[in-house]
Image (cartoon, rainbow, N blue to C red; front, side, top):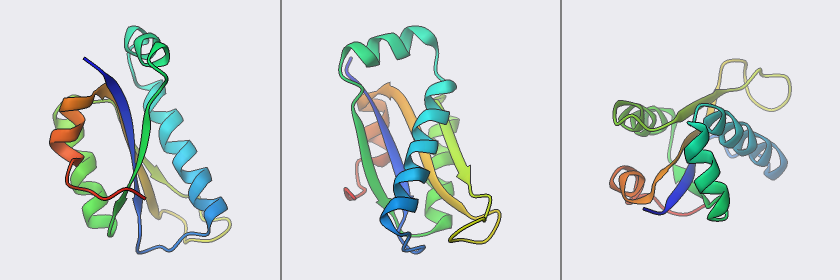
Length: 114
């Protein structure tokens, strides 16, 4: 079983590149912190695959987040503090995994790469 992590990024917010990168990093790290240590160890040994994917809006972001959560995958939903670009409480990104690549692809396989 190969492992990977995906990060879902809302496209309707049109975040500047630096802000988007920071939000993606938050989602990645937070999801990893919710992952069992033995999975993290294996994922690290495989090169820590991470894929950035587009979602159109908050509704779609939450939909995929909830499906992954219901499937038992490590997940993280990032809500921005609102100090720079977006309003406080804006949901910007979601991290899914690291987890089994096939399990994640069943959920997010239809999304486009960032």
